[in-house]
Image: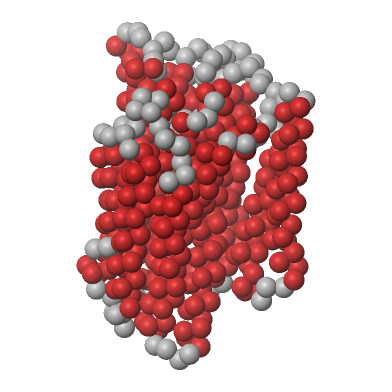
Amino acid sequence: MSQSTAGAAPAAPPAPPPAGTAGDNRRRWAAFGILLLASFINLVDVTIINVAIPRLQASFGASDSDIQWVVAGYVLVFALGLLPFGRLGDLLGRRRLFLFGVAGFTFGSALCGLAPNVEALIGARILQGITAAMMMPQVLAIAQVMFAPHERAVAFSLFGVTAGLASVSGPLAGGALIALDLWGLDWRPIFLVNIPIGLLAIVAGRLLIPESGQRDRGGLDLVGVALGGLTLLAILYPLIEGRDRGWPLWEIGIMLASLPLAALFVAWQRQRRRAARAELLPLALLRNRSFLTGIAMTVLLFSGMSGFFFIVAIFLQTGFGFTPLQSALTTFPFALGILLASIASGRLSVRWPRARIAIGALVFGAGMVALFVIALGLDQAVDHWLFAAPLLPCGIGIGIAIAPLFRTILSRVDPRQAGAGSGALQSFQQVGSAVGVAIQGQIFFPALAAGLAAQQLQGPAFAGALRATLIYEIAVALGLAVLAASLPRLAQEEPTAARPPMEV
């Protein structure tokens, strides 16, 4: 990937050379530390919200659909923003867009912490999602400029460790902050804690991070962004709102409208290609069967993982009276399993990718089956240790599968489209998360309402609703294992296989 200074910032200092003085090296690694710090607060924010969901709902008297929008609204706009903001970073300067993103995310965090009602909170979360999409694509793009090829492996591995630590520490930090009830603010410090960290990242980033960018590669596909956004909104809005509104015909019509909108998006990308203009999602990727299969698996995987944590927080706290900290500690083995398995999986490099994906999916499914069996025996109390035990293999399974899945998806992508391919992969991760929250909400809440209407006690009603949701998780695991067989075989040393899965 060739790099040059963006036309919008001609006076920006050039990136430091990969090889230089000890001072240059310290400066580059300090700059990368700031990038990782900003990434960390974004990734923590994605996970920290789950343990606070029941407290948020009680605090505002919010409906089930309102509380789903608190989670899904963020991931939806984050997914939509990754590709266009990645391109804007090339056009306007990556440091500039990164710092704007951090500033906006910090401001959005303050608005979340001060939100007077659930509508204001949803709006602030959407602002967080937009500005997170502004800063995240720039992190690895800037690293690509700052480091020589032999140094990038270390940089990308540090990014992976940061993501793993965020997944582990997010729920625990959220539970601890709510338990401390700092200054009587209840859940609000989970957002307000981002403010000093964000300010530090802005000041240090201005001093340390070099500017970089590329010349205009065809402009920004605003029509493609709009069509893609409308397609996703047409799917998600009815899924989240439909149950509360009684599924009126107009909402079913909106969902059906997603099909012609998707067709319009593809037709528009085809027209952009004929006109030799930049495509938001290149047609070559849409015609790549292996890439599309991998994207489908990514959506399936993240729909199971993100939706699960959303439901389990409500199950443990609202159903069985767990505190946010107790809930976080109960689900901690899942995040720990992901972290440990991801580290171990990295040592296997590109060996046996399809088998590792299938095995990881089946291990994840086995943990969910064990959880289903435990839920069969639940009455009015939950044994913390008994419930937490199956979550460790669930996390290990996910950690085994993720790295080879990402590598395999990108292995058959033309190197000239690697940036677009990895950007699309990140986008569809977030799409899967939003879809998972919507689908599992549609399973859990009606099952819970039916159980309570049948005059079941609260504990058994929540256990029945969880079992219904776990059937979806088990289906996700089986689907991933089956689809793994259709992925391409990788050579032992594939040139593109070494490309980091999250590169932008």
